[in-house]
Image 1 (tube, helix red, strand yellow):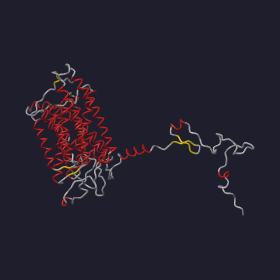
Image 2 (cartoon, rainbow, N blue to C red):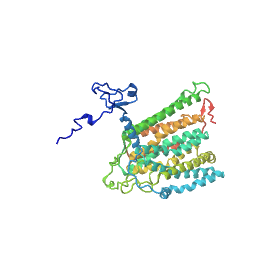
Image 3 (cartoon, rainbow, N blue to C red):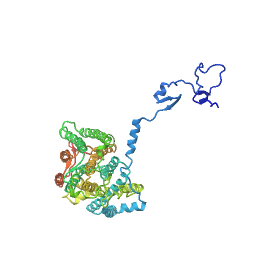
Image 4 (cartoon, rainbow, N blue to C red):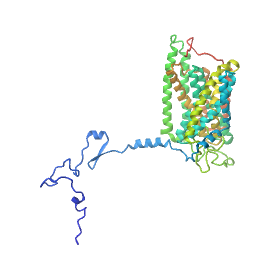
Length: 507
């Protein structure tokens, strides 16, 4: 039996022509037409199609694939919003509220918030208002830290660190914003500079001491430490230049010209500092993100053999948290990250704590003048430079010490120095620009003694971090220097800034 011809031997049967019959003309002699879908010709691509990224394939134009570089960038951005560790089960609303209420013993100080409000509205002693307001801010800072931690758990290490650093300075930003609104410009400057000194010397010093008692030597990323030190030097330069301008060029300008020139210099410097901060974020999150990820499986802290018997589960804290749990561990037994709050409760906690902190901080700022008037031995400069920064950074202080004790010194460094970088390169410049929009003359000209102690502190930290190692003696030096600064400002006289013989007016 004869087999029928296959499609491979008969192309006419394999792909029949859709062209209408044209009489006796042969297909080979027929010129190609637009109506012939099977014409064996190459479709011409117009310059417009080339510009739009259109290719021709089998006579049918199609779009090109997305560019590989763009896809890599998008994938890298998406990776920042993927949790670094597997998360445990999401708690219910009731369990989340219970976890927030029992998070830290500092929550008992929440009772002082209504007391401070009652004292404020009943016009009682300014000293009592200040004390109870300060005590009320302590748990609010811890609650802000808890909410921040739970939000950061849902992101990568780098984004979590940015969220921590940003929301970790909310209390300081609120206090500075209230003071700016009330035209207390020196209070704005002193509280922010006090935050820098507190994080650089007190927080880092306590982390050195506590970690040094357990680990003979603690190591951290030297390149990151050098970069952080360089950024702090840049911030100090931005404060020294206006001070030098005021000191040496005041007499060379005509009367009334110094303040406009200083404002122009400060606002231009603020823009430059913000650009540097944005570049730092790109460096940290994109180009060199591997430098900012701690090596958790191989701790870099050298520890003696008799101390290394501790459980790994007990020696690790959440990498995202600037206010990690002070009462219990944050990891379950199967290695999953413990989730204390669900997302709605965490967001509500952030909003509620911020609102309560704003009202309480406003009462705190309002009571300063009465406190200084009733206690002449205490200067307002000391309260704003020493006391208020310690109160607003209490959660970060405890966190840095806890993680340093557990051998996570890279995280302790990121909490302390990272907060300094954000204040110096972002918070202060933003407030200068906001004051510009509010028509308030806030400049980068700080008090000369404040600028001097900040410059010396940055040099001390830079020299101590250059080799990428630390020990407890460095912490003792840092804390001692901070105490010396606190003593020098105890009886610091309150003065009004004078420009070319005229007082600076803020309305």
